[in-house]
Length: 365
Ligand SMILES: *Cc1c(COP(=O)(O)O)cnc(C)c1O
Image 1 (tube, helix red, strand yellow):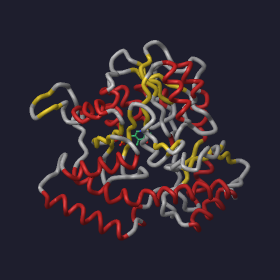
Image 2 (image 1 turned 90 degrees about the horizontal axis):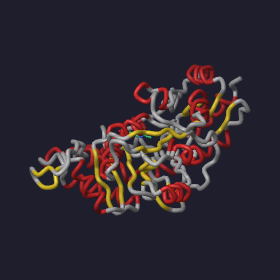
Image 3 (image 1 turned 60 degrees about the vertical axis):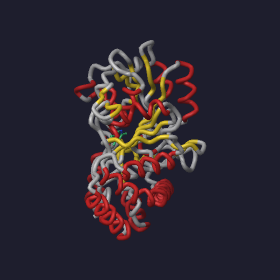
């Protein structure tokens, strides 16, 4: 069986280091907002080339906290893509603001900036691009659009660890970037974890208060914040796992390239190639098929697990059925959601397994 993620294939050396890190925390007697969190925050900020990283309980909260720290709330609109993980949009709703849904580009699955233009109104306060599947958008275009409309730029980087555009890491192009370290993400904890990265000292200070009950100093609450802290155990484990991230990411890029070369079935549509070698971190390798159910069944019969990201676009989710959207429609998001299939793309796939998957796909009629 070729699994979608295979944690049991992680190197024994990593397991030993994680066990030692866990013991270190358990014996330290410090479990919340201690030295491990500060150490990981500082390494993650450095990895991203960002001045600050604030650890949070998860990626969705990092987005909500960042939006609230920018003063975005009731009556404000935030433009987001109609095809993304639901938490992208749920974070906007949780901040009290209104999501407005833009269509996607069918070659990449990413937010289409022409559609974004049609979504912007005088209530729009921010653009929230999602670097979906690990592919970063053209960030100069996003910056230019935000400058011309005088709105904030905030990035959902939950799938885009180490994806960069012209040498700059995801999350550093606008006001802040939100990362998730959910276990299956390219850098995953052993439970929930997330972080917000920003170059603004004011935003960093406010975000670190908001994640901690809006507490400025002990027992003084200037804001009605939330409880969303990264804990010491996850931070210590993340620090160990971080030293493997570069290798894992280059293996994911290898796998992406191999799939692109080896999948030759004319009934299958590949997404467009990344524009720069480092602009895609291949969190997911996604293909399109008109006969999705049959292809997934065929893969399963051949011992290969595949998934769908995402079967239901945001505007068909009950809490979002009434939200404002591109007046022209969300046709690409609809059609993509009906055809997309994600293939296994974790860094422990062997060359033989990749060949096998390509062979099985090429034999599909
Ligand atoms: C995983 C994910 C999130 C949410 O992250 P959590 O840590 O699960 O809260 C948000 N956006 C995208 C695109 C994601 O893939």
